Each structure stands twice: as structure tokens, then as C-alpha cells.
Image: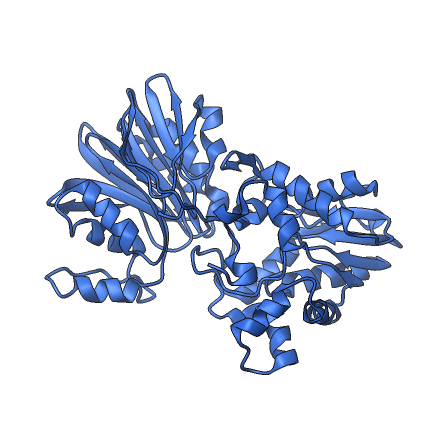
Length: 467
């Protein structure tokens, strides 16, 4: 996916920009960059962070990134921020986006005299494409609006100019943009916690489709927010950092709620509750607190030399490295009946290997409780997975085995309903394939209750296929 951080300061913004951007490292694994505007104009640096953390890559670049205004990003895909010179003047731009209609947009723009630089994989840099859309209009505000309206998928952005920073949230609010402030400085970011240790206090979250411009003194709304929202629920379940919050709801608290509601529907006889580190840990604490079953850490994640950013793009290698990070604590596994909570089951490969690893370490039983429902549809709105096909999802593969190659959306809705017999048949089959002792998913209605805001404001497409 990706995240961004922007700062406007009376003095140098470089320190805040560096650490504020770094606090988004959990959201991306491939590219990172910073751009600033100072006395000498614009300057930027972009690096590959696949094998090296952000701080290590950029520490020596800071001297060349002096200015009062700046934007930075962590990206899972395209290199950014990019610098643009157009009839709007010069600006730098970074985005968090998924553009489903990129080919159509490119074809339309190419009818003019514009050209694009292809990336190494043959695709167009999404941020460059957004900049091209903005440049179709007479002024920057209209251009930003046009980009938000044109993109099918999702789009949030920061734009750095000599007079301030523009921030725009996706028109459906699928990803967050949060504002912070302190004396003589303001910031905008994806993750709300990223500015707290830098001395900022919470200002507010942008609404869906809202556009603002800010400098070190003030923030002004240019386009008011729309009334409809569909923020990604998976941000709370998995992607968000524990100390973050979205729409006023703490990620950590939501995960405790998930575990609590999972426990209320369960009656399994186990010795301990554990979370797959680290994404399942908070859910497991919530389950343990509600059930009274002791919380335990029968395995731990080795992170000193295995940062999250060290994740190859080849899925086979990603699965291997994910397995290598987990170190067993044999005294807490041997002869134990374990209940294990993970954020989700996508392909099932890693969790099956983890389960086998626990059996090999002496576990008597391994009961699995995912913190969200079965994933049935590939996400249309966020780049949260490298999967190219919905058939990579374990639930869809099992449904194909049960129903044949051609499965209608109506039939898929039956499998999404936890009260339908077909749902239980699917769950039993997944349990058998992955060699779990038992399997019970979090229900969609319980998960939405765990968030605690109006369910109509939450996107649930990947679980039920509903827009």
C-alpha cells in the first residue's frame, strides 16, 4: 500500500519530515522518498528500501534536503514523490492510490502531446498519472478535484508548492488523511500517531473528498468534504499500526474488541490463547481477557535482522522468510492445546506452515481463529496484496472445488453468509486442507461491531463483494 507525511514549518522541516515519514514504514516495503522546498528551490531523494530500512537509506541525505516545506512517502510500488513543472508552476506530489482505470486515462491523455515514462515493469507510475490529470485543468484546485473524480479505485495525495502543501483525501474516504499542529508548524499524514512524538497535537481528520492547503500558520479548506464514506475496515484489522486511530477509533482497541467478540461465540477447550506475531497479538489479548483463558507467546518474531521491509516480491520467498522469522518457545508449546489468532487467512500458506511448525514443536492441538471473515474478493480499492487473481485466495479455491469453475456472485453471497450451510462446508474444507484442529472465522457483523462506527461508512468489499 503506502503512506505519506507532509510538513510546513517556520524553521527547517527536515527533522520532522524524516521521522514522520519513517513512522509509515509498516505500510510499504519497496520505495521511499522525500521532497522539500527551500531557499534553493525543490530537491528530492528516492531510494529502494527492499533490503534496507528507511532511516538507514536516508540518514546521509538529510543535509541536501533542507527547507521549510516538505513531503515524504513510503510506497509499495511506484517511486515517489515526483517533481512536476507545468502551467500550475512547479510542485512535488505523492499519492496513496489504486487506479483501476489507468489504461483508459493514459489513452485519453495521450490523445494530446503528453508522454509518460514507463517503469521497469512496463506500467505507468500512478503518481505521474495523477499529476497528468491535475494538469488537465486551469488551476490546481480544479485539477485535484478532477483527479479525485476521474480515478476508479482510490486516491489520496499531498502536493508540495512554494506557498504551502495541498492535502486531499480520497472522494470516498477509503484511506485516511490526518492533520496535526504545533507552534509554528503543521503536518498532514496517513497515520495519526506519526506526529505525536514530534511535538504535534491532533487537529482533525479530513473528510471524504476534502481538499485543504496549509502552511506553518494555518490550514484552509478549499473543497468541503462529501457526505458518503467507505473507509477500508482492513486498516483496523491488519494494516494500521497499533497506536494509530481512524475516524476516532483506536486500532489497538478495535483489535481487543475483535478478540472479545470472537471469544463470546466460542466454546473451545484449550490451554492457552496466542496471537501470530505481531498482527494477531492484540486480537489474542482481547480473546484471552474475555474468555479467561491464559494469554501466551509460544513463539516470537525475530526482528533485529529481519525488518518488515526485507520482503522479496516473489511469493515463495516471502512465505519462506515469514516462516524463518518465527522462533518457537518449546516449553510453552509441548503438550499444549493452543488457540491461535491471526489477522486473516489469505492464501493459507503461511498459517499452514505455522501450524505444522507448532505440531512439530510438540503442540497437541492447534485451533485457528482469524480476526476477520473469509476473504472472497480481491480488493478493488487498495494495493494491500500482490495477488493477481482471486483464485489465489484459499476460500475461493475451496469454493471452486465445491461448486466448479463458474461460480456466480449470487452463489458467492451464500458462502459469505455465516448462517448458510454452504459457509460452514467451506470453513470445514479450509480447516481440513490447512490441517487445523478447528477453524472459526470472525463474523462480519461482529467485526463491524468491533469497529463501532456506522457500518455504512465501512468498506467490506473483500468479504462480501458489496460496494
